[in-house]
Length: 222
Ligand SMILES: *Cc1c(COP(=O)(O)O)cnc(C)c1O
Image (cartoon, rainbow, N blue to C red; front, side):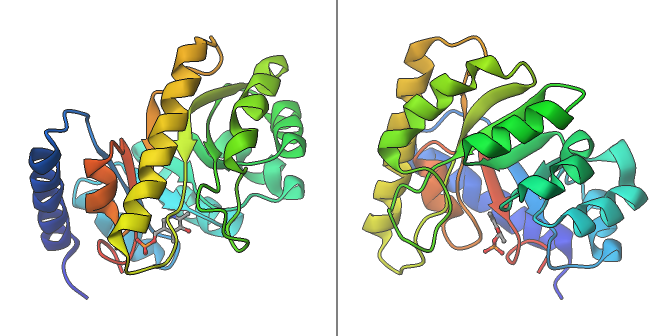
């Protein structure tokens, strides 16, 4: 396994180049997705200076948080089953996978603080992907007003698994367009300034298209 510091330098350099190509000015937060690596490797990631850590299972999140605690910002990036909400919701800083009303209800019931949520959109319309379809995103966000513990900080998507850059880029462009529509609504509980998009294979495209959070596993810690 390559050193995380070396991987991080490469990724930061590529992000800078992508920003320059697109004349992009946004700040990029790198989330180290540690779901497939050990606690030791996750500690190494924090030692390399990574602040944001992403997990997609309650067990993994709790085990790693048990070791690292509040020295990191914790992101839950995977599908969250409603019955597991109470295990994790007060342990995380950001949820990237809010995709249904019943999940929001359960979060609101179990949370004892405001939870920063990304609404997950299935922009590409692939059956295999979780997330709300494009036309449901705005009505869904409007329906969140009743939940005092939920704050919609942004939108999240996963690009389809394809070699075709144009398809990937269009998915990211669509997400940004939706995000800007939400911003225009001026909802106090949904500032929606952030875009969580881009993984190991497509983060450069995501940065060019306005990502503010990239979620990188394999290329960083894998
Ligand atoms: C696993 C995962 C990632 C990271 O994927 P890599 O290809 O390893 O960078 C990002 N986002 C989500 C939602 C994931 O499940």
